[in-house]
Image 1 (cartoon, rainbow, N blue to C red):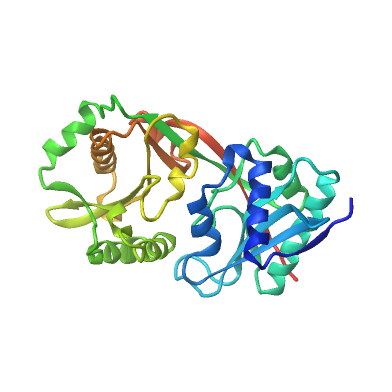
Image 2: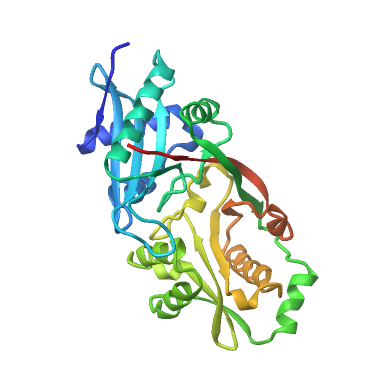
Amino acid sequence: MEFEVRRLTDYTAVRDGIECWNRAHPDFSLPERVVTQSVFAPFDGLDVTVWGAVSDGSVVAVAVGKRLVETIPDYAGPEQGWISLFAVDPSVADRRAIADELLGTVERAATDRGVSRLRFGGDPGQVLPGAPTEFDSLRETLRDAGFESRETVHDLQRDIAEFDPGERVARVRESWPGLTVERAGADDADLRSFLADQFPGRWYYEARNVCRVPGGGTDYWLLRHDGTAVRFARTNAPDSTYRGANVNWADRLDGAVCGLGPLGVHESYRGRGWGLWMIASIVERYRDAGYDRTVIDWTGLLDYYRKLGFEPWLAYETFAKEVSS
């Protein structure tokens, strides 16, 4: 079949590209708000480009590329690029030829703009942390194009209707009576200060953007010890003002779903069991609010979260490539 790879620069064409993704990957069909956040209203300092393969006026393949236009300290700069989405309509012929040409075009365009490292998924405001392991053809296309597999990460989930953290976790509160868990709320100064000090890279950059959204700070939590912030977490629900990636696929699960993550603890307060206690405290509050399941996304810490009954749900293979013009 004849096709042309070109940039998609008007709203209708980009929407056609998103629908191409949805046809190709119905189990990962994109909620409207995810499209808006990730593609049309991305994080500050992030450039988004959409490419498509067009045949007879129809978009038969799509790729969404991202690139930082400024350096985010302790994270990345304009040399880092991402492929956020990549799909070829399963109903068309010559799918592999289309995929190869589209991927090559995206890579050349990225290098022309100064990108030297490309990663699939894991972009700021990500849809996916990597290629779902069930996407066999995409993973093969990436490998054949020189992308290297780095690791496998997972989304975890568990039913929380009968959630019980166990006696060991419950004892943490008795041993450390000065511990409290509270939402950051509209006054996010303590959250920003904590992240700038302990997690000055991606998580601080992410929080700056999420907290710009009305109510965005409400989804962040702080664990305090005698009033001092020592750990943070973020939660999301499908109706949160900023919809986090941990609930991107909430419709695949039964009942009311909430998401948890990222999470991080101050380097001086690790190894005390406080992290599990914080997670348990938050999950209990969502359980009591009527939620049925909790998802923790993009993690390799399976044994750690299994202590609270979380089990692997979805798996992703991360891919990266050093590129040059």
